[in-house]
Image 1 (cartoon, protein in one colour):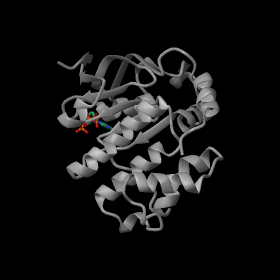
Image 2 (image 1 turned 180 degrees about the horizontal axis):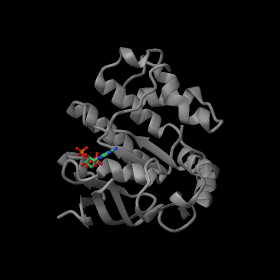
Image 3 (image 1 turned 120 degrees about the horizontal axis):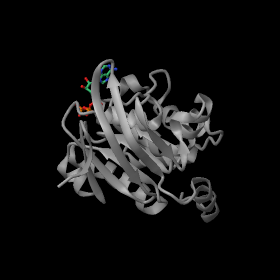
Image 4 (image 1 turned 45 degrees about the vertical axis):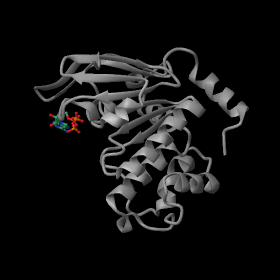
Length: 235
Ligand SMILES: Nc1ncnc2c1ncn2[C@@H]1O[C@H](COP(=O)(O)OP(=O)(O)OP(=O)(O)O)[C@@H](O)[C@H]1O
């Protein structure tokens, strides 16, 4: 089911004009060890941006800082014009629920909830339970008959698809996806990338996709490369 025009209008009003995501001069250390510094980027609604960088350079850390799940040591992150780190935690959590879909590298599927309940969780937290939408997401990720299973009964690739369905179910304006196709065969990976692209093209979402895959990066509007000293456009 596509969102109604009125829903899209309401969302556009809530998001406002400006870039959906603005990161300025972000720096992060663990103790005395710097991870990155001077990281800046902007992403507008309707943009699909790939993020590349050597293993350990801080791509997952950057996504966590953008989401407000980790605290940067310097710089700022603004989501839909709101300064994430300056907001009190309950307000940050509300912003995350409403604006973000996050595909974690380690999935973070909740073990005590069924597949369908995991996928439906963002809708429940927003007070908008919608079993038909959950079933649509199950279909979209190729797991139509598996909604009643528990996570312990799934393969790694299936867990990854649950994490993706959960990140997209509430049609978030910003999708942060950390290696979302890492455990998938090429056909399933292509299907998942199609799904992310659809969310961007049809619903005007913005997507920041961490990937080591050339074929995934080739689908992006822009490719950024994270370095310890900042962000650059990839060659
Ligand atoms: N909680 C932590 N405490 C200390 N160091 C950490 C912590 N989390 C991450 N690091 C370090 O921060 C650096 C960045 O890690 P991160 O996982 O963000 O890299 P990455 O670019 O996503 O790597 P990969 O491509 O291998 O997933 C690494 O050197 C890692 O060892």
